[in-house]
Length: 303
Length: 271
Image (cartoon, rainbow over all chains, first blue to last red; front, side):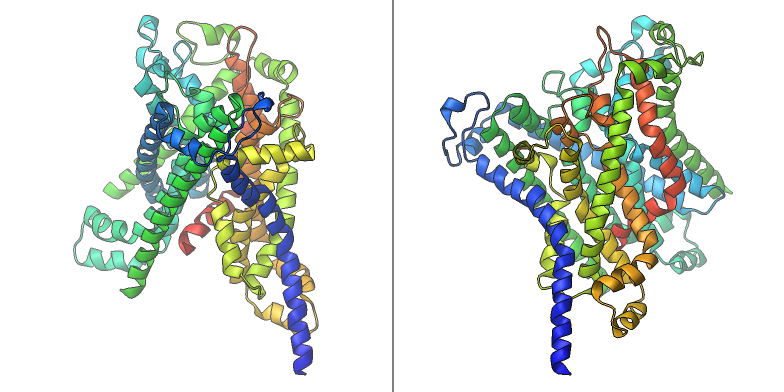
């Protein structure tokens, strides 16, 4: 009897491995190995088109160069600015969206669907859309603001700080609903009797929001912040389509700089170093967040 | 009363801000070139279909749509095919190193595309996958697997285990149990995963840009990002192509809103 059990168990273990193996194989080949390869490449000098130079091992030289590269500094600052501005705005807009679609009203499904449309639209389409809206001649922004006073029309994307603001706006439009859904999930687990009790005690709508909703929403807000931050850090499509990093380097972000270095200039070693640096930054960020969320969950359990 | 007014304002504002910007593209797609270029540009279109015709026949729109359908469809099928058994095993069976596998998958879902772009390109170059549609399907599958496996595993865990135990007692092996018992029960979860993978693959731009360099193989996002005219930017054709690229998504979102909401918020609750 025991023997039969052991055989069954072993057979189940084998089946389990067979079930996981194909997925694991694809993950290893197309995600894990490439990261390791990036790391390896970043320790070399490799230039596409100059094969006679070979690919000498240079240790951390590329990373040293990265520390003293003014464009990389600029891209870091711009990326950071983009991440902070867009995630904060998205969290604020997402909170409003979540509060609205959490209510019960007729046609709520349709409203939820409508709010999800910007999230479902390809980022490339959203980028072209906002680029067109802020076009200097044909754009809706100018038409709305100045009507037929065409001499007043503003070339929005030609101004460095305005261009970054427009890119942020496009991102906020596109992804606030995603943040909204994460926050909605948090709203749905707040027990309703808390509000009833507060109402009995005479708390106003605002007091209920500040003292019940917001504190209990903290884990969901942190999680939305985590997802949005990591996604904003990877911004590429918007910049590629809307500004190509310009005007000047005003919207130059790390991922776009890495792309240019790797694929336009063919500096494989240096480009890989940029990629690895971005990867490490995201890793550090997510670990920090996860720790914050983890301790938050523990706090909740304890109380 | 005050609350109801506030809610009405909230509903109106969020819906209007979500839809109005894209409406400008919809309007533009039905304009004529003169209406676009007028100073100031015309508000309302005369209802011309010229831009759709020109986008289809002069700007490879037909190729882009076909390629997107093939790429998004095969990514979804392949990713589900790999994710379903993996998620089942991780949710129900005993595997050594389960926590490690789940942690690695979570880690992969956070990868910036740039961190793997160069090596993936070299890999596909070696495999002969550059400029082939299957060349983007492989990385898409790898990048959607973590989400699909996490989503499905958490769904499988919520199913009552009694049925599966009964099947097991009756001599059904793990594969038989998965296909005969669990899978039929898990259709809503699989549907949710399928929608999310489909939207990802339909919208992905970065890898498609690197891997597909000929219009005959390119997907809609690449086509739309690289849209160019001979002398000026063809905004009308671009708007028409954008409407074509977005229409199926709007349909999916309006019809499947419930599954998307549950799928996206599943991670948040369990977080």
